[in-house]
Image 1: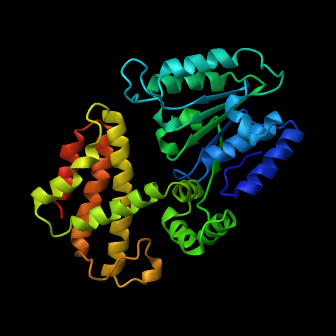
Image 2: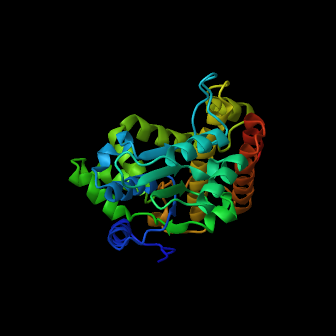
Image 3: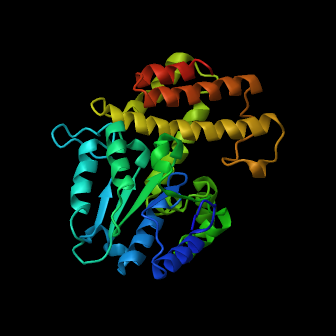
Length: 318
């Protein structure tokens, strides 16, 4: 049975439970969706159901193996990829009998970050699956996975959650109505992000500060723009982490560009994410230029182009 449809978490859980009862599980599932939309949470819920345990015990269960991007133990810097050694270690562990004599569950968080060597090693495992190992690959961009890996997975696409559902869930947790409404709107359908912001007001403030930073770049001399963005480059010794942080910031900038484009086209304020004042406006042609440069910069960052030079190229477009 294929699950190549965009369906809700509850539907997926019910379908998965049915497949468990019928002993009709596929050996690999790829969960695709925006960051913080709930891929990891869903994978943990499905794994817990498969192993007949509570979700909160997933990370200490002997038959659950989680693979994700790590820091180099010697340098302390973030590794560029999920490397081949991580997959080889996983393959060795999963080749053993499960400690509880049942299933072994492998969760690969950020599967798009696997190196070519790691991807090929995983592919070999997927080509020769064991009956008692179930894989969950989590990714926000399935196009960055090998086509041969995608073809061996059942794809599950997770759609954004409605604002009113996130808002209601936050209010049920005891958060105030106004805050819940604000967080739900800015979280853009991603419950994981909403919960994180609700728990950590400083992080929510940091997001709003990033919006203010972008707006402050408009009609500002270049030297001031450079000064305003200097802290984006973070730890000069961990270039991988700096690039990932920059990509997240650029994603916020793209959302603001979207809102500004709506203002220039006379769109309704209710359609905006950030509710920008009408006085904040740039010509449509300029917005398009900035947008193109942001997308180009994101791609350059993934190819290890110098971060500062890439961002300055965007600033020149203002």
